[in-house]
Image (cartoon, rainbow, N blue to C red; front, side, top):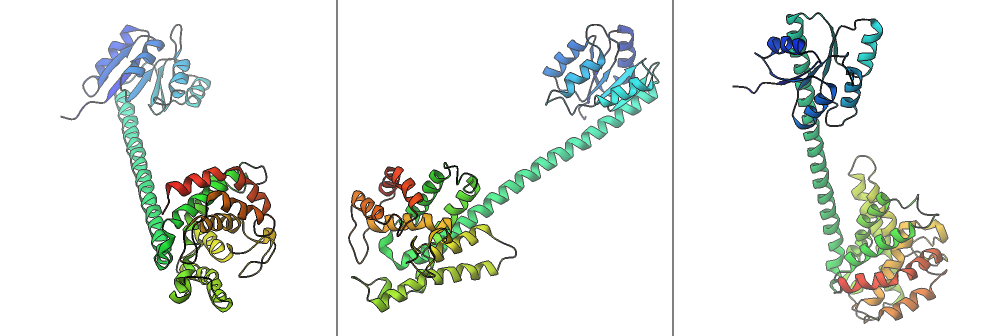
Length: 359
């Protein structure tokens, strides 16, 4: 047997409560309250599906009762029917404006009461169903969005590992530089100049895109990429092409997708321009100053710092303090001086990341 819906009757007259209860008790579970405060107490402690509310009551009238019901988040969706002898148009307008779903004048008609209660409970049931359905769908959307985000991260990691496996001594280089960029961007976001540019969303996109900075190395011959010792000038020219190769690879992937993909746009900038220098002496285009995208200026510091402290086939790792001095010497020539100053302010955080994710 299906559970009965609960009706709360609110009236200060015992005779009216008895009459209403007699009309509804066969079909519904009926609870009675002889005052507004008593009704609110019941609503606070027991589940109620609909309220039938008198207006003229001592201490707290029906208008105040409905105001409090509608002001309480967990009660606001409960339908309230006014049941009253106040039958002027102004009274009805006020009742509906306060959130009543219906307004029935006394003396009451049992068939009308039964019909109206049944109708509004059905409406509430359908509304609750849609509300639950929407909550379920929203939950599913969030779940699917997370799955897509996780798949995206996994795809990025897989693509980045193509370059990493070509240069096996880089170890955790990708993870470290990713964290360096995020940390430095967050620091920069504390400055007035950048706080509206480097939002949490943008910083997260920088973080997601950073692993693709060296994806172009997959196109560099092993003889050059894995060479022990310094590259000859012609070999270095070949090595420099990895920036453009990475850009083109990401651009090709972007073409396969419909619409803009923000993290791929940022990834293109990072891959192509992270070897540009503040004074215009970098590659591949010789950009200078703020012509260089912000994401690439951040990556330039992260990439060089990690290259200095890491062992490569062509060099040994150097200590943090020595790497710090080399980078500081590049202030205003290799690196954006403003960003470099913020790097210096948090250099110990970089060192901590380097130790945590050491090769």
